[in-house]
Image (cartoon, rainbow, N blue to C red; front, top):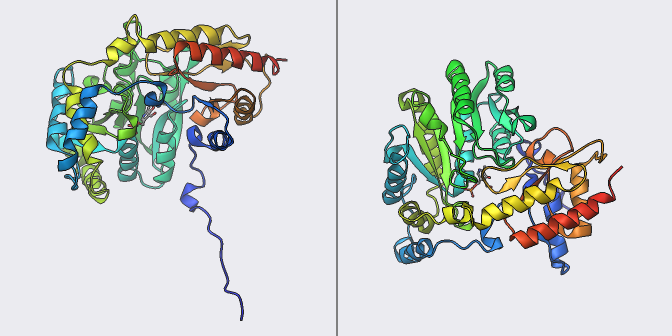
Length: 409
Ligand code: PLP
């Protein structure tokens, strides 16, 4: 009998240029080491719960109470009570008017980013994405057949977007600009002037604004977050947010996207979004029931970011300790839960930053993500998640400093 011809299975061509190093090869090695019994300090994802950030009780209680009535699919855009709570939340801010129909709930912001890029992009269409970025934006754009064009966020200018670079990179094919504010991975919070300049470019070139504001309530030292939609009521803007960070329930997978501006100029795109929302049936229903209670009343995140707050203390420790390592410098994060230190190339000759992360993992049992994983063009940065308790973070950075001594020239 002749043996049947087996062919091997490769990933699709579509995935060939898609990467997501936050959960890439170094993180896979960390998981393997854990199976071998090693204890790894995982600073690769912004996952608050694993560092003892408990969700507010009321959120959990409402979600549990909703379980018996959450067995069926919901409407594809999400339950009305949650969408109404989102309208009310933004009504209290200086935000352009919108209604429940302008909101899509999702299994986290992640799903809504994928839906948006799939609905928006044709082959070769371009999206302006910050550099460094939160790499899902680049991955989702590439997967959707679009081209990610990265604009510089300037470390010399507190990681603010370079308006010159944005202007230089707009082309006939540019459809949208992504603004991540407060920023992952840099921790920058943009001023009104900077946001206004981005809006001016978007207005001039008729760009859709994609505003990822998932860290909008994680702010330090009195920093103020301004939603870019509030400066652009005349421009089509999608604002993304959710419960993963400020409400510490990343695992529940609850996020939303709000459309503001001239919807009549986006009928086709909105049809596409409705189609994709329908084909994913609906977001996780119990988690949708957590949204209303999360958004109303006491906002416990402000205790964590305020003067005596855990998140603030950890931000301070990361800033001070990292800057005390010879050849390492870091800008103070004004928001979010990350910082993006620089390794001075005169002091550290790094050619492969993923290999450096692998060496740190193996030697110090600390999992970090290389700067190139955030589409940073040179192997001279890495990201630190500032979620561990201050003492643990301080100890980890000290160990990192000792390890880096062996790399110094
Ligand atoms: N956007 C940014 C900037 C993020 O940092 C993250 C998660 O780290 C997400 C979106 C994804 O969030 P979600 O848990 O809502 O999918």
